[in-house]
Image (cartoon, rainbow, N blue to C red; front, side, top):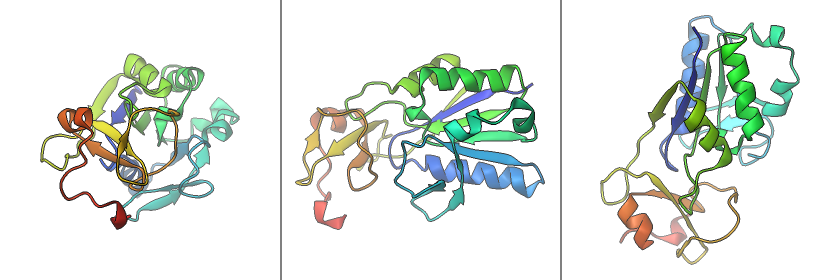
Length: 195
């Protein structure tokens, strides 16, 4: 029986690397996968999922997958969605359809919450509807589990106001534990010039 998985983590927890490794594991065993992401995420170039450790693979955009007939999608052993926090409510419900009605396993990777500590719409609906939830862990500069995403400006100051979606990676965000996220403390070794 197919299931909907949501694997979430803070910035820097290797979610995209995990998505790419899951795809590789299926393909290595002769099972076709479909790698998908929302078109909103343009950081990695056109139709590409890229991880910080250098793994990369072509993908389709979510709206392109949605335009495919269910019968065509059923050729895939698994659908893997990166940057799932950017999905809409209706897109998450479409994934539920693929799992429940088409019997296609779907694995979603994404952030749980934004830099303000508020859920992304896609993450909210995945947390409600997923069959399995799994945290992809990383650590704060202090060694505790990082579960929060801090956005920082060009001077290295943590910001907690602004648009929910500002695309970036290590140049704008860092994963922190709750204490240091609340304090806006990027750590004694943080150097904005390293970017």
